[in-house]
Length: 167
Image 1: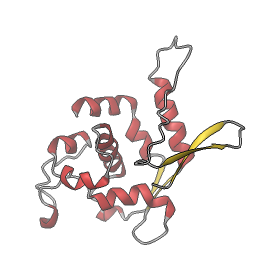
Image 2 (image 1 turned 90 degrees about the vertical axis):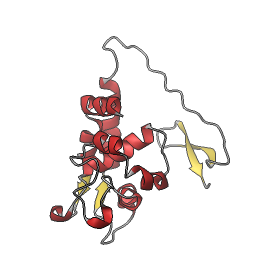
Image 3 (image 1 turned 180 degrees about the vertical axis):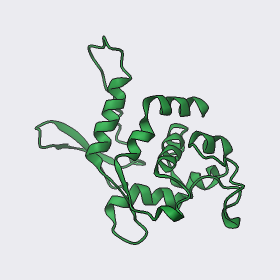
Image 4 (image 1 turned 135 degrees about the horizontal axis):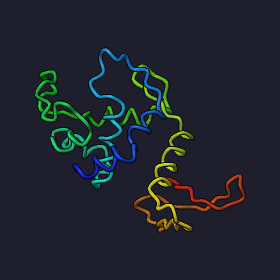
């Protein structure tokens, strides 16, 4: 976990990602900064926890809290209802992920997808050796019914890409 945090800090992954979002929450009442939320989610994914329901238990993980940059990794200074849970709830993380799709009083965070794409590409390119001549991206295009059907579609550049359909 600490290695993931060092890599994140070195590449500026979540710091830069946080700049790709608009956070309209009233900062007087914010317990989890946008960067902490993103670090929590990204590091959870890196550890193999892709489902948000796993994060209900992970909220109590002090090492993940340190990785996310929490000052109180044991959650001892939080309100009584959340004491012992330093990290955000799955519903809070879900609002970050779905913020662009809704406009309600609960959805105060929205992303700028083009900026996210550019930032992640920049992080990837910066991590390459300067003399790199070729990069091979090997994507698993397995048609796995558990994960949804993958159907090829043409995009506007004339190339072929995949689109997940249903699950």
